[in-house]
Image: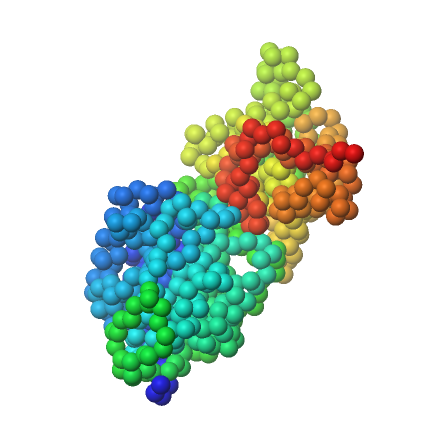
Length: 578
């Protein structure tokens, strides 16, 4: 080892759009140029940033894989033309060879790809299906740049105890960079930070972790990129849910001699430059670590990001939702205003004969508070036609009200091009407390993965945040405090059909998130009759959930990508016999 040298590194926490190779390439060039102009010598982008992530079955389409492979070479030339040729730039992309598609990273320098790394460990759980799409890599490149030996890894590679981190540690590296597409989950604590710190200690070298930000369909990426030193101490960190260019100077050993440490067969060494890099002229401001967000602030940011990107990336100009005066539609409306601006949000009150005066006034109050576009479209006459002609009573009459509202929303959507939003929450979706082709109508469901009790917490937090800023409270207090009701029959309350929400959410958390069976739930202290009732409702509503719109994932087990059960199934959780 020779004397210590300084390497200026940039982690580019960016938002990529699946399939938009050209625009994603422009983002990479722009951010790389910005980093290099700030003196960065190493610039690291997230996993699959060139293609967007996850690409699902696009990975299996040869035309797309070929275009992605070609584009990385084009990108290398554009980076050099943009003044970034002297920097080492790591870019995640879709590679393809004779064995199949690979989740890969390209190391670019001086206008060409000098090394490629394919992800070794392919996650096949939760929202991930990478074993379906990609061929795992086996090569482990170590690149010497400015006398510094740099190893590269991709996301799941550091989550596995048997991953390539140990092989890099044995071979000896001075810095490891990790490209990530790691989705957000509520109440995840700081598992990433603890993991990154542990891997850095195992390596005996600093570790730089860069993550995507933004949303893709139901997934939200929160960024949270970071750098830790060889002892696992946090040096710098990016904020969550915003694009960021994290610049940091690292003092690293300069290796002038050949490395003689033990190498595994798959390790490939490439030298770009053995001499120390010039020290950047302009010093950087001291690195910062943003304060952590509260759980409510974190979830709100995730929901806003998910909705905003779904609207933008699918080219919708405006959104439309029904305003009932209740808590769910009020929270969704406030999310919409924060995500796309009040002028692009259209709310419709659709009173029936059973709608209370306070529901109408609360909906109008919300419109005034948020500034969204507001109209009233009564459904009384529409409902009467269906009820009288078909002779509907009871549940059929209740449901036709919800379906008349759906027809109204879809008619306005077709006429004006709005994206219709479903306003149901996870608790209702779990137990089937929604009308298929009624309140389940829409192209996106912003709070689909938010339990009812947390919807209230979000409403209270958002109003407190507005008060702290000296702004108008967006959510009418009456929408928060009044008992919830679908108002589809006289004096109807949710409590007529459902257990109290706090108890219901507790059972659902154990059954849905924890995959606990009947005996486990009862052993945990839940009432046996309550368990039987809730489990029966959940199991019977699978067909409804399968037809529900996509919505932002915030929990460990969201309905859809995470929790996949057959619609047709005779398995039921039951009380043990005898």
